[in-house]
Image (cartoon, rainbow, N blue to C red; front, side, top):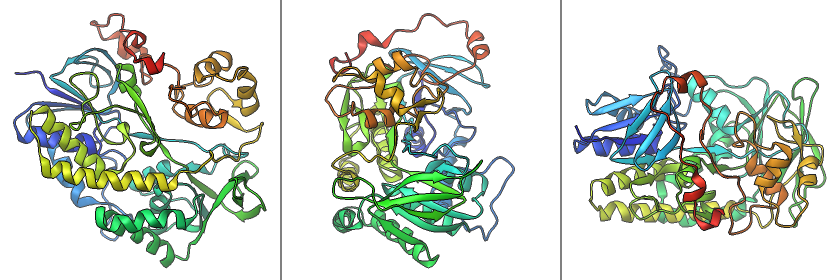
Length: 464
């Protein structure tokens, strides 16, 4: 049998790509570190659980069933709970997990690695009861759990509405939504989207209507500045932003849960480690792999799709999965490309509408930035001794990003707060294998392990 197409990530983008390839008789190997396919958007209940007929969760079950049907295809090999920790050579994937460890030689590799949330540090953000919007959505969709007591949702971007509406519909007592960008700045993009992506605009309006029906107070042009509590969160300070985007005139709200959603960043570690040329595109979430119209990166045979290649949401992810599959098959689908360009234009305009002319911040010098290493902002500032300091130097001096998360939960925040991610040169430390934590006992079973290629020699000039 021919080498399979290896797809890393079983979310909407990866499943869409797999479905198209399998329909044409191409064998596919699908790897995902979650135990179930579906990703964050189509997150499934645990095995053996079913949702009640009157469940109030905002779930798209129809499209989820269609996509997940590919798991029953004979030409598909699915390895759930499996971590792809390196791409040690062109056309090869190294993996480890309970399903075995080893290497897979691929006809093509498709990275559908999704995104991670960018934390918004401020005094008190590490208190129990402060949770990310994505984490809260995962609990609601994957476990049917919603927080008790008064819930405040705060952030900047479309994820704020999604999280607030989902929680309110599921029965949580959401009292306030606090959004940093004034509504008028987003309205123009939404109006234009009526022609480009009407379904997405309707969905956004539906979220706002859900909040109105549940009596949720919506405040735009505000940020959260502090969380208070003894042992867990009890209250939240919020403040409007002045023209320079500095918070002032603080107001305190009672809250037992604070949900934060201040943006997403592409999970591009595998692309970087593979030597893909990266470009800084703020409308796509930051540093993303440069791609062709067929989603191929600058590394031949390596494709990147979905939020891992640029924040765009589920509709973009589904289309990019199909486009990558057609490119692997050597085909072109002009109607599909035209539809993609239309929705891509809308997602970029919406992303720019949420951007601010200076980075948002409510952190003081005592605010913890790196939770793994318990590093505060003043310690990171002390390591910035030169004007051109990058995060690699800060990491060497302070251990920033050396914890279990390997910087996924702190490097983006640190870059923003230290003003080192606003240039044409990537400020992030080089990505080295393993790109995800793996157990040594899993690696010990892989008798084919040899020294992995260091990415330094393959990285483009912008990373040197």
